[in-house]
Amino acid sequence: FQYDHEAFLGKEEARSFDQLSPEESRERLGKIVDRIDDNKDGYITTEELKNWIKRVQKRYIYENVAKVWKDYDLNKDDKIAWEEYKQATYGYYL
Image (cartoon, rainbow, N blue to C red; front, side, top):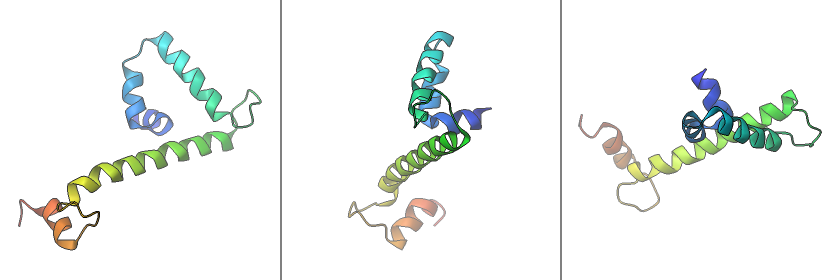
């Protein structure tokens, strides 16, 4: 259930939905469904749902990379050297 929730909404959005009342949740979900319905025919097709989930997951990946990048780019030169990667990943072991 939780995986489907996050796949459909995105991790951050799923957390915010967990805090809503059922009425608020239904209202926000209705707005999302309108965004999923690309051809605005009032129905969601399998293809539209697949495209939506791909967009949500892609956004999550980009956001996650941006967050992790800061931790790995220790000297803040917008590059991650092998030494920086090893230090950020295994530093306390080395």
